[in-house]
Every structure is written in structure tokens, then in C-alpha cells.
Length: 237
Image (cartoon, rainbow, N blue to C red):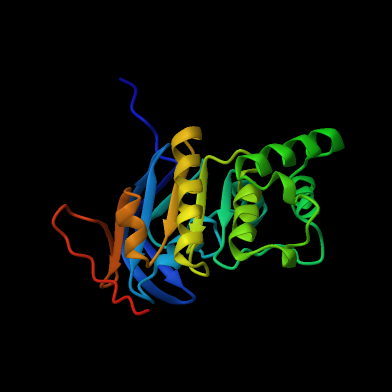
């Protein structure tokens, strides 16, 4: 049986937040089809791992690879090509508020090399249908609810058929019912398309209801959850 190669891999990697090391000796593999949560209290380095994966934070010690690119020593000119192979979803949606949903998605496609207007239009229709937003193409972001904006952000992340979706607290600004809808969408994409998902969350209900692999950040480490481990997130509502 052929051995699967990881999409994302770290070995003995020190994860930085600015100049400070927040996680030492990270060993982590994400394989095609995985759904991996990164959890932990505030300030334990969860988002710093995400930023390292997308080459926003530099990796100085240890090795890392994502979507075929070495993260240690990645060249500035290669970073856009790395990011084209992954979809990134943020807590605060990060849509362009001065243009329609369709123009938001068209902007990304053109920025990543698409030129044929017919193909651009067809791809936008496909991703909007996949997130149940096909009737919202001509809306402005401010005309959409938070949940709808996040669905558009997920559609945007799917435009270039990524190997992996990187999601940083994608339900953090949403009420429980809306968050549940977003999780059903992400887990559905993961199961149906085989797209790997790496998701930062502090919401225990989410990773208990939608099981996946769980990486726990604490005490300057990030290790995969053991079977009997009780995760202390100190969640306050």
C-alpha cells in the first residue's frame, strides 16, 4: 500500500510570534482528507502556527513544509504561489466591502492568474452553489449576515481548488446556530471533496460535536490529544 505524503509537515519547529518563541519543537503532519483542530487557551500559539503555515511568520529553527513548499527559508517571491494552493478563512471574513460578492471572488481569481471572463463567471457560480450562496452574487457584503459573509469567505477559499483549507477561528464571531451551519459546511467539504482542513478554535462544543484530530497547545508545546486527556480551555462566555 502506497504511503500517503503529508500536505503540511513540521519537524522540531520553533513557532514564533513576532520575536518571541511561543511553541518549541513542533512535530505535526496533516494528510489529505484530514480534519485537524488546533486548540488551547488564548496566547498559547494557535494562530502563530497558522501564520507559519501560510508563511506570514518566518520559520527559523526546525523544518516545515506546506503544499510542496519548504517553509524554512521560503523565498518572498514563492509565498503567493504557496498561498494559491491553500484556502484561508479568517474570523473576521476579510471581504472587500466596496464591491459585490461576485466582484470579491472575481478579484481573487484575476489576482491568481485567471483571464477568461466566461471561465471566471463559471467558477464563481460553482463555488457559490457549493456554499448555498448562489443567489447572493450581486449583494454587497454589508447586506449579508455574519454567517452569510463567512460562507462567502469559504467560497473564496475554494476558488483555486485548494489542497487544504486553513481556518482561523472561523466561527468566533458567530452565534451557536450560525456556527453550526458553518461547521456542517466545512465538514461536508472535507468529506465530499477530500479537502484537508486545519482549524483553530477555542470552542470545545465544536470539536466535540464534529470529531477530528486535535492538536493541543499548552506550556509552549503543541501535541496531539491523547485518548484520556482533558483539555483545559478556560472558556468564559
